[in-house]
Length: 438
Image (tube, rainbow, N blue to C red; front, side, top):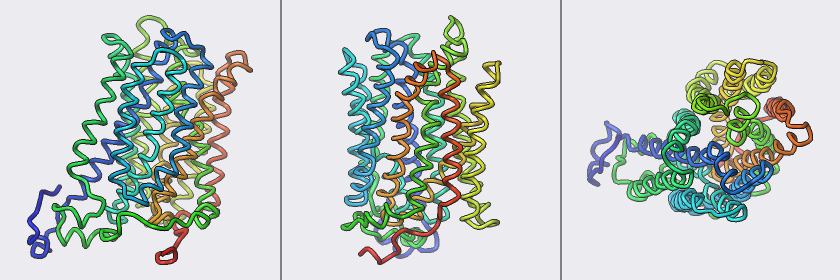
């Protein structure tokens, strides 16, 4: 994957390109895994936190809300900072801040302190994925980018999938407070290695030779951009629809992160002694299958693009897969058997996530040198969907008399709306062509 090279090797060993760029994919994959691990912990520990701090279900919904809205509010600034100053410094800020407040969640003493801590955790995580996308675009050839997105989101989903099971095991031996402290250490370890190895421009890295530089179209692009064409980006119809579909699919998807463990305990009977671990495994199923969907998407979309054209392939995946996710949510509601219902919901996560790497690939192709800003806008809307979903589910349960069917039908409707958005998206044309914004 690349080792430090003498300067002279760059000019002489042109026939055998190094593979240092593969380490960039490793960094992206591992940080995505850590990110989702840290944010899923609280959902699995929610019952214990509510009991110790004497919180109502609605109060817990607002705890989810403040994280999501902090994450939402700082997404575009986080992506813009990556475009302005480079991904390296921004990612180091991101991972340090969120790791500290992951650990600090274990130190809270009441409802207000928990709200403040989760808000600052959201501020810390904002900008992670836009800057990872910026990093991948600068370091990878075009044909490798969507595959890398697929691997990155595969890791994110599987990190979220295994976390409920890991936390359930940890809570049998540790308090929820100690569990948060342990998960907070993961990002600090990642940041140490990243600081020592990563450079914003491939040409500045000693492990990259001339042959590898020739394979990377953006290897010589400056780390930061002085001008951001805000109007051109956010007045573009395709960008607006891309943001809208990500908001809607995220509203449905965040149910798995925020409320699924509670749903399994309260509506599907997994609160009895001996059933908690089984419930934890089922809670991870949508993320587990979603990870497979992300991985397959990174392999499938380029092949479909070569046969059908990139525009048709991406639109088709968006419409068909998100429509299928909505239908599978409806099926899960209608099934009485809790295991079969969760299998249906798991495949809703699978079809949802067949579209996620495609969405981020569109950000890289449409955003160009402003990938961080476009990605930040899209992820802002995704976080907004999660922010709305947190308290919305609690209030829908209140008005329906604790009937879980209503919030699930609303999630299905959100998926159908997301599918419709893809009909109007141009997924390949840059909003600002090269040279126009200089």
